[in-house]
Length: 194
Image (cartoon, rainbow, N blue to C red; front, side, top):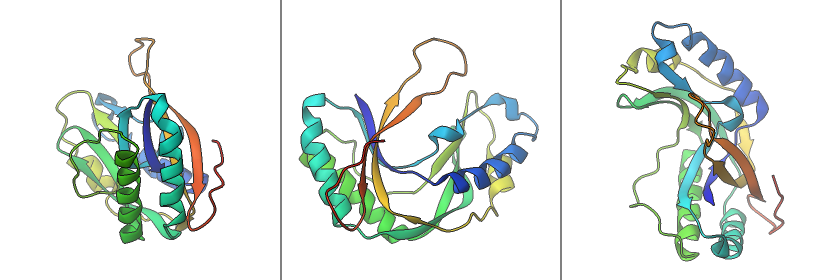
């Protein structure tokens, strides 16, 4: 199972960002980008890749503990950037220290559950908006979204998300994301399914 821990923005934050992204899609060469599906927009905290299902019970228990130990925090989608010519993303503002701590705890939970994680690097909150199919200069798109200021919301949970990769071979098909567990921040072990 291909999974990751994430913060999921509420519908109103997705709608706000979606309206701004629609304007970007009118820029020259926007059709050269593979735009991500709004239903799948998220802030990845810890990417775990392929995980043996036998490890899931321990991972769930450890993620519940990580969520319980973490405080709720304010967040908003803010600004934009790009990773070279590969990916265009929206950033975040607000409780970034709390978000980084939650990311570290999710990463540690995965490691302690026996999941081989990539080399640890400083967490950079980002929500991927588009990926480049070819070498495409993304600066104009990032500049077009650079002053975006979404409304503040309260992050209240940690989600475990399954990524179902495209299998049809149809060009442009997107991964399908399925929330397989949600834990409230700051209290309770009560897991909710997605």
